[in-house]
Image 1 (cartoon, rainbow, N blue to C red):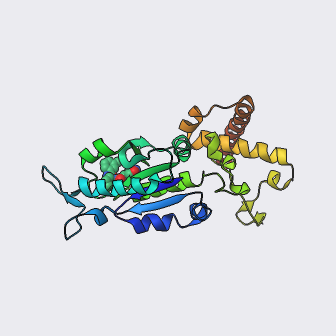
Image 2 (cartoon, helix red, strand yellow):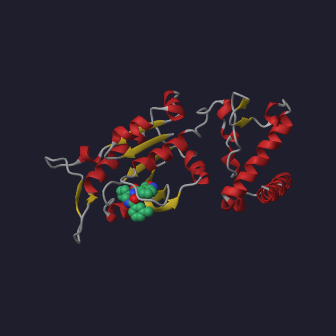
Image 3 (tube, rainbow, N blue to C red):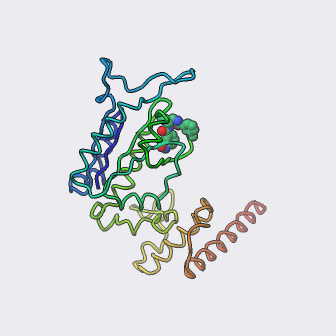
Length: 262
Ligand code: 4G1
């Protein structure tokens, strides 16, 4: 996959795309990331890519023409390698929220062009004419779209065939089944702050898999019930969740007993 990023801060994107799983995917030739700075496509002496807002008020807006030329260059650079025309995605708080299903969809494309806003954002006419879709990473204020683009690159890059080793494989990701992760433990087995659950050192792989799924279900139920509503659980999963819920209720009853007893 090839990802072109239009950004006023190319160094940020490039340093994100150099590290970890994504960096390795690039070294293996599974992923290409290139950046395009609209300032390099400005025509005035100050290399202006932003201007004051019509209608007044504080803040600047990214101008159409430097963006348009940056986009044309990005398109042309990728055109040789790719089959299909790249979709242009604007990272924006007005977009649909990114989730793992969307990440999986994006990961199947062979290229995409990401646009990062700064200041008050991008001239609306550019969005109407040149942008195919808008994606948001969440409901909060950011000072630019670069962090959002880095999230897309990370989430999509690690799904490229061959990017993950067996231990990290995407099927191992709890989220690939729509659930939160189970708890994880490492050495030492016994510690002042607690012991590792005995099942994990039992060597009984079936029991371990069962425990992990039960924990993932239980934690999702406790912390993200909204996710559980969308996950379609099979009979075995529903039984494990019921078991977790029963034990959770018993645990609460015990706590109440302890409180009144002490
Ligand atoms: C109004 C958040 C404005 C922000 C309402 C998630 C946020 C890009 C994202 C803003 C941005 C809310 C994102 C806001 C983002 C122009 C430049 C837009 C930065 C900008 C909730 C500033 N996912 N924000 N405006 O943050 O780009 O992708």
